[in-house]
Length: 318
Image (cartoon, rainbow, N blue to C red; front, side, top):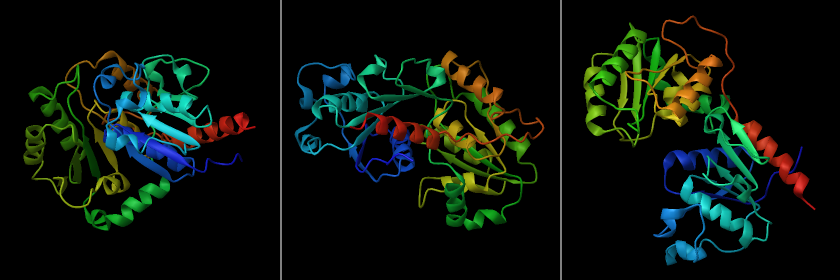
């Protein structure tokens, strides 16, 4: 098996979902990554990942000192801001740093050694590695760790329904019609069972409060952001998972668990998100609540992407 990289940077734009994908890939590569949270200044942030004069002046002085040699064997970025810095690293290191960008950078992917993008982005190129969903750390070991960290969830009545709540985005409104559809789906699945729910940073507080009040008569938990994050326990103990339709990351992680996954909608989805949902349904990873349980392999792509990157890095080595 090709030797894994010895040093790695994960370049973060501060978005938790982006950083999570990059860290999951670094872990699958078997390397301890140094996480660099490096927000861009204007005007570089406006144009990223397109380059304009100034180079490292895109970073504040306090951050510039962290973006210096020695360069790592591999740098992994996720998101548009991080893409500018991973692109710059390729030149700054004279090609010695293998640059990986996660998500469509919206410009020629040839500016990086590898770009990992979901198929619904329809990105093409010789160095593009296409996935069905988002990279994530969910595997059997991760799920077992979640069960060990939150053993009290085992005592909750079954079926245990995990509810993962994202937030509104262009074309997806978290309105009264949507909350009605979501609650009907969750209540229908959790009859005589329990609900383990969590909101995200993107969830409007009023929407989260509305859900919490509406589900208060069902045993379980609605995490309020205090104490240890129970997310691994929610997925580890879930018999079924309901995910709001907006989040590619949460739908991908739910699909990696190996239990039935459902969503709720009150209006047609935007085209790109609709393509992603269609691909999940085609694989049997997203189903209607009344569908018969199919024996579908969980969606676990991170290790396969890591293996391909190790092979490509080895082939490039002198």
